[in-house]
Image (tube, rainbow over the protein chains, first blue to last red):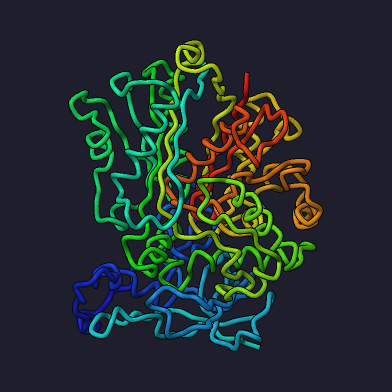
Length: 148
Length: 388
């Protein structure tokens, strides 16, 4: 497992109803670096990661797998009315991206709403996702940008 | 297994009910259902309550007990159980009540649904609803519920012939029906223009493609079919109860524009009832968004994949059409108090089958269907009810 060094934990809990520090922190490898998983028994890749292979069940052997971060837009929307934490970003493109390794994931696409289209090639980038209020933690994670 | 019948139904009006709290809502619906069945409360053996998120909407958990207490049944010590499956909570509560009676474990069982959504800011209620999807891998990255259904719409319109106007017709038709339903949140007819000029929410979905935030409660009472005539002259038989699940995220679905859980639950229900879609006189489907009704009527088999837009525009889903869809006004116009919706669908079908649906009555209605979805299709409950 990819270990989180202790010095990477500068966050303080905002005390609100937002995501707690522990809940955010424990998924940092997955959210920052696209560390997913892979079943060695059937070679199926998982992102978002799974710790149990739905195909092989108990005979599955799950290991960590670093995704290359390249994919294709399957479908998308442009969000105009967002949840509170995302209001500052509207309008933004939200898409389902099929990663080259197989799995699909939901992510924002950093591009003009007019440019997004089905079949567009994209690559992952590290970006700020949201903020829990003025003094809360800043959520970083993966967005995608057009790659061609 | 015993045959099961609905012997009483009740429903509050739906809307932004500022003067009614959570307790008043379910007490009103329960009292109406008991009155309808001419039943006194002490005859009730058990209750199942559909509720998505009292914990976040009114910061109250343990509502099975709360409801039993305020229904005056605390001293009877009956089992009272909350059932949660996001927007399908009501449909699952009904199914649990049916199972309890069918199994012989209980005789007279209340299935209710309640949601009080306007005691929090609108932003907080939409955020709570996001919990019906995957919070970690959909909500966290900026998905909203309209956004997820909008991605279904984008995929659908890319692959099948569905125009923006045909999609709007779903809302126009449901408002027409809502205007003929005294409990509906919106009793105004609208035009395609109304939909196309409304605020953009998540492309291509606009405000009038979306179901509203609603307060409301509904209750139905089920009993063994062979005892039903002790309580009512018009028992409505439960011909099938089916439930299916699918991946919690939209992105993991086999096909973005097909709700496989709807297909599975629909097929199972038809098989159990030994019926086909041709036998259904009207159906209440889960139109949380206009595109959801398009997918639902296809996935249940009322028309072929890709044809629901034309089917709707041709009037086949209207009150006078081949298969009237959402005679109540659906979630769009009748309102969508999430935990109550699945029970309200049963309430509507029972009214139709008893010939009590007033201006929206379907002639000679004998068999009706309900279709209740949780999330973007991770849970689906389908029921078939019939007049006997």
